[in-house]
Image (cartoon, rainbow, N blue to C red; front, side, top):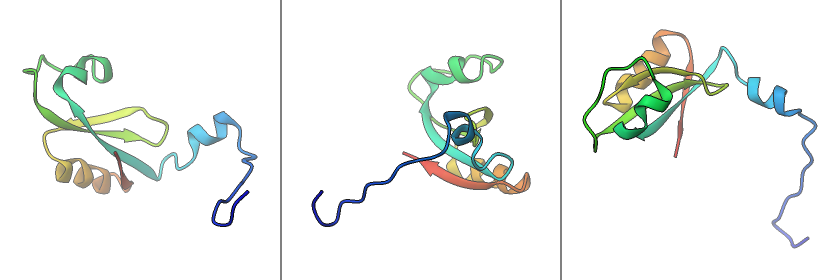
Length: 87
């Protein structure tokens, strides 16, 4: 290993990793309107080509859909969740 590289072993199971931050952390992810039916099947039909933002629970469960990152973050805060961005 070269200097500056760090090796680490995770002792977390995939199940434990999936629940890390559960109830405390949510993430905001930019999505395209074409992806909405897969994430939010109950959502009304949305015109293609739109940039939207989805708020997800730490385990990946979709919570809400909005047209602004700020609204997604505000919703997280209103539910006492720490919002992080996913790129």
